[in-house]
Structures are given as C-alpha cells and as structure tokens.
Length: 164
Image 1 (spheres, rainbow, N blue to C red):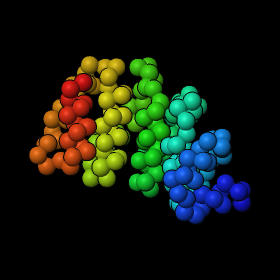
Image 2: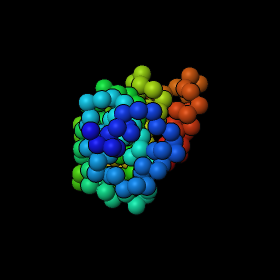
Image 3: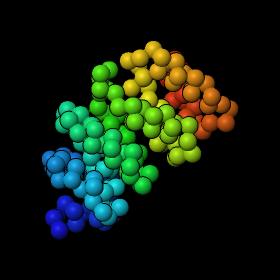
Image 4: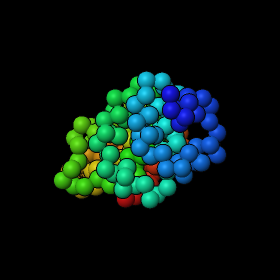
C-alpha cells in the first residue's frame, strides 16, 4: 500500500488535505478516486478539491472521466466532491455530454443532498448556456422549484441562476 493510500484510508484534517493538495500527488490522487475503499476514494476526492487553480487545466483533461465517476458512484459525498471538481472545468458548446446534462437536470430536481443539488444547478447552467433552447428548459426547471419550500442554499442558487 502506498504511503498516500495509507494516509487517505484514515481520518484526515482540513490542514492535511490542503498540505497533500500542495504536495503534487495529482496523478496518485486521481487513481485513488477509484479505490474500492470508500473512505480512501472520498478522501482522495476531498484532497483534490484543494488543488490550486493552476491544476484546473489538468482537471479539464480528465473531465470525461470525472463525469463518468460522478454519474456512477454510490457515494453521495464523492459525487458532490467530484461535481465540485467538474465545476472548475469549462464546457465547450461542441462537447456537451447529453448523458451528463440529463444527469444534472435530474439531480437538481431530486432528493439528493443540498450540496449535490446546488452543484447540479450550476453544472446544468454551465452546459445549457451555449443553447437557447436548453436555457429555456433550465429556466422552466428552476421555475418548478418553489422558493418558499427551498432551503436557503437552494433558494440562493435558484435566484442567482434566474438572474443570469
């Protein structure tokens, strides 16, 4: 077992996560995202959310793999963390994955935790912005969310997206 895997298989603090992210273990962290041990893979995703902005191009190169993992993981923690990573990558008009767009539309209106729903809203917008017909569908989906029954975080992101 690698030293990094040993560390990630236990509890790690926020300062540990930031230190590991600065230590340039990107490739090994990326491989550990797919580890069979839930704690190890969740922790790898958490550490990766602390990567510096200079790693965004590196993340963009792995966007499709991250998308696949976000859509297929059973761990809602890992899904939320990976969606945070995906949110750091751009979506080009000619490379929108309809399966991920559908996934995000479904998650924003699902019973997922608030963090996943909020990120699903942001990622749906990031993909829809290139197409007026998708923006209209996105707007309609946001309108279906009744603000008076939404938690504060969802109410905020809904209002922010409606203004865009």
